[in-house]
Amino acid sequence: MLFRHLLEKRGIRTPEDVLPLYREAAKQLDSKTAEPAAKTVEGWFYYGRRPQRAFREVIVAMLGRSIDQLWSEVPEGTDPDFAPLTDVSPTAPHADAGADLSEMRRTGSMAVQRARQFLLGKDQGAVGEETLGLLDDEVERLVAAYPREPLSVIWDDLLVVQEQVFRLLEGGRVKQLSHLRDLNFKASILSFLVAKGFNDMQAPYDAMTMTRVAASCAKTCEHQGLIALTDGLKSLIAYWADKPADAYHYARQGSANAANLGGTVGLWLLGLEARAAALLGDEETVLRANREADRRRETVVYDDLDRLGGLFSYAFEKQQYYAVEAEVHLGRGTADLIARAAGAVEGFSDPNVEAWAFGDLAGSQCNLALVRLASGDVEGTADAISPVLGLQPGFRNKGIIVSALRVRQALVSGPGRSGTVGRALSEEIEAFPGSRTALPRG
Image 1 (cartoon, rainbow, N blue to C red):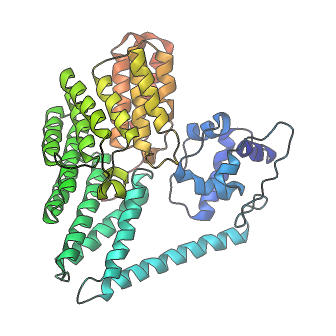
Image 2 (image 1 turned 180 degrees about the horizontal axis):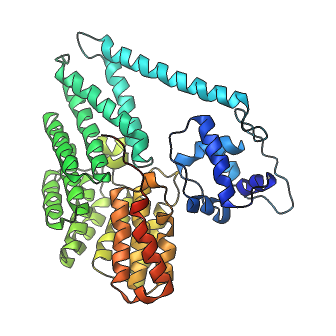
Image 3 (image 1 turned 90 degrees about the horizontal axis):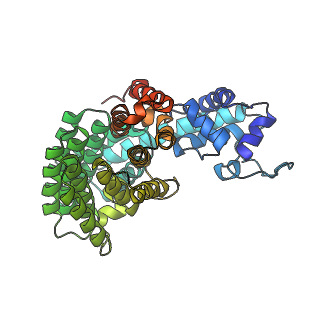
């Protein structure tokens, strides 16, 4: 692999030696992304795992090649002839030109921010089409980034854009009903993301409050799909707060609101219903909800929320993940479920796929660990959860932490706890939440 080949040519032969080079490149770029964990670098160096999107810019700057080039195989005994990228130099990674480019990006970003504020304040009498278009761009960017980036990367921007929309709605500048509806739609979308962020930060009370704001805006703009989605978010918050009865109630409420909708929101609510029912021990409801979701998948008509994407669309890959998780909660460890759990992990294996989300990948990996453990395969459990434990702290949200701790709970209460692998894995998972970094402000 070219990544390892180039590093070894520089005398870097262990993952530990990669980190100082990475830190220097990140400093040159003024990168705000947390550095990768040692196990993450080990996965790149020894096992050829492609890096997550958050790390790619720094790696490209560090070695002067694209990610596709760096993760290409290098035939034994050959010297690859990939041309370096034009704005980085692998032979002089700390050259002044790189520092100049970083400074240009920084000052350019300041100019864009100033222009954005100018445009938002320009239409003093009324909200204009350009202002709405600017907000469209911001909403689309944040929706796309949320499942892929650490919350700390987008949190400040998310709060700023939400505040901008609230100010426009409160300022009495909206003259057209269509603009008023559009702004309430945006306010609902942004409040949904902020609520999800609070939940990821283990602040369920704030998450539920913000979800109610999202629901209010959805009702104001009379968007039935968003109304149903906010019910789903309430269910999600309750699910991760270990309140399965509440999670089930909100999922059923959302299903009623989504009864006449053709998009994927109804499928998401069925998945939420199945997971909550599984925690309640209701196997019949789990099977019914999952079968209904499979049936309705065949007749889905994608709507405006599906076109928006991110958390607002329920991809087939995510449906597989939810269905497996519900059955895992029922304590099953059959060969069929193991295969389906592995398939769910495979569904999120390529970060270039539109449906990819780091949280769904980690959740699928924890489910695979649990179902292998239920079958008595402790070493397979350790292998499945290893990538999760190697996540850098910024990616360790509430759902991932809870999912990992479920694996530990199953370990310590099962026969695998007495073995060497089981004990070591239990200790590693126990330390997992404690190594999380500080949460973003908000």
